[in-house]
Image (cartoon, rainbow, N blue to C red; front, side, top):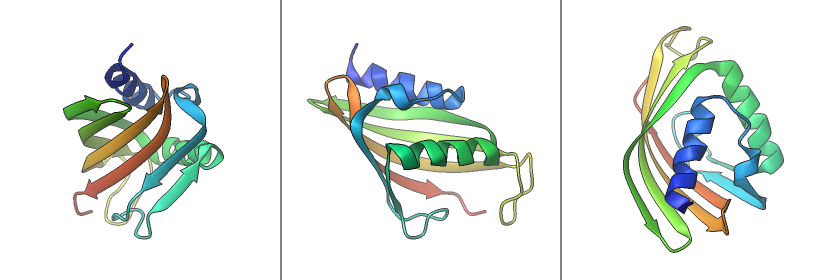
Length: 127
C-alpha cells in the first residue's frame, strides 16, 4: 500500500473515531504549529497523542477531512485538507452543534509503513 493511501486511511480512521495508534511508529512525534486553538503550538509523543485524541472526541461531535491536494515523495506525504468539525460542547463564541472550519497543511514522514513524524499547520476560520 502506498504511503499516500496510508494517510488517506489514517484520516478516515480519525473521522470514524477509531484508535489510530496502529498507524504510528514507536517513536512517533507530532508537532502542531501555533494556531487559534493552540497559540503556543504543541509537541506530542504517542502518550500525549492518545490523550489529545480522547479530549478531541469529548469536544467534537464529528469531524471530516476533505483532501484538497496530496503529494507523495520518498518517505514524505504532504497533504492540504479542509477540516470541518461539529462541536459537542461550547467553545468561545460557538455553541454545541455549531461547525468549525479550518484549512490544514500536514506533512507525514514515514518509517516503512508507519508514521514517524507529523507536522501540522492549522489555519482555523475565526470563531
